[in-house]
Image 1 (tube, one colour):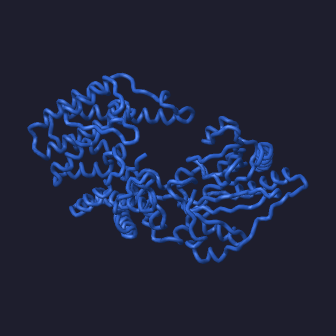
Image 2 (cartoon, helix red, strand yellow):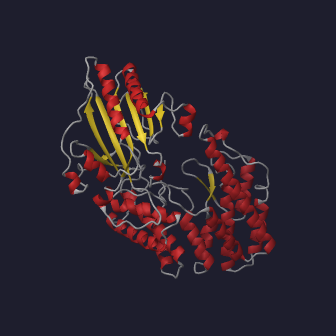
Image 3 (spheres, one colour):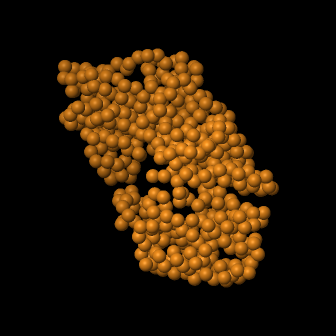
Length: 526
């Protein structure tokens, strides 16, 4: 489901003037209505999917197609049907020989981000015109299974003439094409054809165009995952986290042997978490259920945690504020690394906890850690209070600023809906920017403050499914857009190559184009 806006009102005037009302003539009509529908649908599908290639911009497409065809223009809404990552879609309905409806949709995505990432200079319609075509979808009404299968078979024959035999099941899986009863090809694009007797909204596919049983054809570029730009923003890479953890350990000024124990366990936990995550992602390509997920073996990652932290906090008792801030930040990072090994398994939940889970939680609470149940599942998670203490303990010290950067980068997660962390990021980030920072650090802060303003833009733009922010005064949206762009521009002037710069470019692109950006710090309830 998408929000309709004025028909092509935001496109370049030259593009708007090129559009004339018309219908595409349907061909191959015969006395047999069902056969005619199948033939017409196959010809439409052949024409549309054969023209999907990389690099076709909205401006180019409109110059070619807009001269003789009328299209309904829509912008995406983040929480409705449709791919949701597109910047523009064009749709139209036509009639089959029988009078049934055939619909087609073209989805245009922001252009791929290319390093070095340069702050976008175009705005609004001019920027939208650079979107590139990435998905084509065609659907036709199929009143009976016989009609639906006849249409699908006609399409399959037509596409087989063009691209050879379709992919077998193993080849479809290797190409990431799923589903039963689907014919598939993978030449210039990933193409599928099927009859869907009970179509529904699929979060991983374009939105349904026609209600009821349909014959469907979908084609998408193989690099579609690289074009989406509203996903979670990058926080800190593993190498950066490891480097900052070592800085925190050193800043604590604790005995060398104890510091080495901290570093060894942290390295073990992060490596184990990364390996299990990779194994889980591979397993989910064929079977993705909780009981099938990989589990850690041995106990060298689990047993040392509490004794090590007990020794660590004993050593911190006599240190000054700056050293204690380093120690708290290191302890926070270690506990977060431990919790990332099969998240949700170790601290229990508000509804039920094993004896072992309760014991572990209790021992960590004795050391000062606090736990909160997640608002969506009730599972206890570490609240991040050691990080909060570290950033507030000695804000003017290097380690205090490091703790603040860590909090701004990773936050404490969404333990409650309606969190206003984005407001804190704006205030504390601006205060941090008033101090002397090296260029990479200043760029990171600018990007994060820009993301905080982007959260306000997104919520004002309708990204609040359950009214978590209904009572919030978010201020003027135009002002938030201007400030977000100012921070992204300042950050990209200092850093044009990192993953964070890439995310900042994507966010800035959406805002400059007049679209809804992604969110980073906002927390939405179920």
